[in-house]
Length: 234
Image (cartoon, rainbow, N blue to C red; front, side):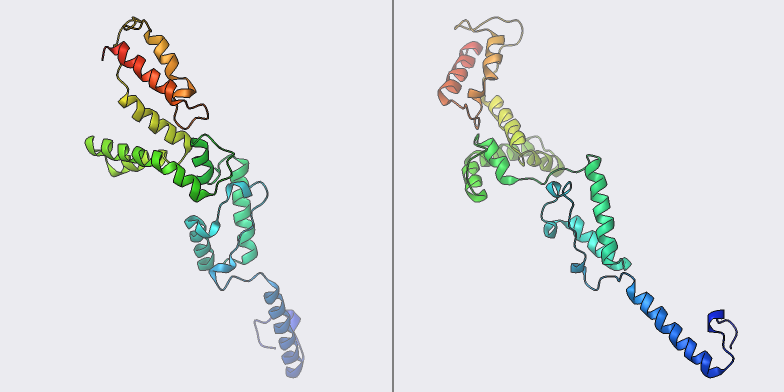
């Protein structure tokens, strides 16, 4: 038997050695074939999230980060089963650590801002109802950023506020505050109507003043504006 071969291939005759070598090769080939194989295409790297992760995972086909992970796995020759275990374990640990956030539900945010979170509307209809309110707010952001010569990054940060109902409410409150006549600073003195500064501030917090609130009352808001004008003497 030639030197360097393992003892299991030891044979007295060349033909016996050849037989053992052939059998050993078959066994090795079978063992290698049974090992997990790397994917041949990126689409083979699928991921099925666990129940605790599913609420935080949106459409992975549209997730650029997941696409990067698939490409890296293919380049590294990672077996398909190993990809599922690795990504699943990674996401599970993130969920347990409170490091995941739920994907943005555009329709839910729109309906929340409109004050009818339980309305049975499709996303397109909800956004159509929101548009007359949201578009002027974007316009105010554009004007403010232009007037203040803010950076594109600052403008993008302001735009990001408009992704959620709470963010839109904040932007609208700023816009409304800019339109509302200011209160004279100093003291608690009242205007001609006898209303004090503290009373006006308290009134302003009433949900009937907030557009999009389920309690929105145009007449109440108009009266609030009138009181502010009288208080400031304008």
